[in-house]
Length: 281
Image (cartoon, rainbow, N blue to C red):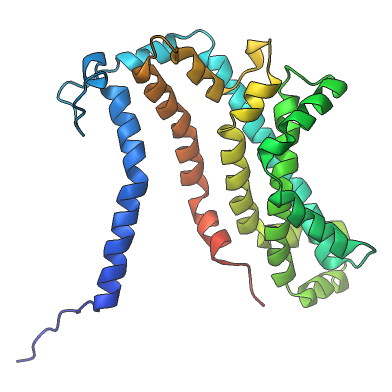
């Protein structure tokens, strides 16, 4: 009678799994604390002995958030800004990455180095020059003052990342498409774009999070017209120096996190492929 052998985990694999679990707990704990703060009653939030649970959860903080008459407008503005940044940066980065990879032209290397240098400059150092630029263009107190800078800051990373995906597509595939009568535009949109789509998704996640969570530009460029504010600015409604509404802050932060989670769920398969590498010949 043969014995059934149970698979034995190697020590290094078990250690890796335990380490990954611990990292996941550390990363997820701030999210848990944020949700817990949103569900706690005011008495527990202001308690000097905080506990990692609550015995009397309440939705009062969420009710105060949705009762703010401008909250819906802030939410729509954030969607417009993030959506515009994702679509525009993905399109421009795809075309730019194709150009610097497939074509040889003067100053191509210089252009790529400039992309790297642009990523090294802190955003805070450019906020004041961007403010005067937006003022001269008449874009202050408009969503355009938030969309354009985020597109500019997301492009260097997107172009560099997509460059590897475009390079991994074999040139023989492009030559075969031309021999079959496909034009350059047809190859670009019907063949090359689906192959580099995982990379586009990965860069889009970066662009979406950067635009969605932006507070610096929203605070600097939206000065007087509050109807053009975004969700991060809505947190200031609940934060008052004399009497901050921490429950409202946590509830609004939780609502802000939901679209990001939904976006991750929608693109998770493509995101894993994009982070794993490009297509291979």
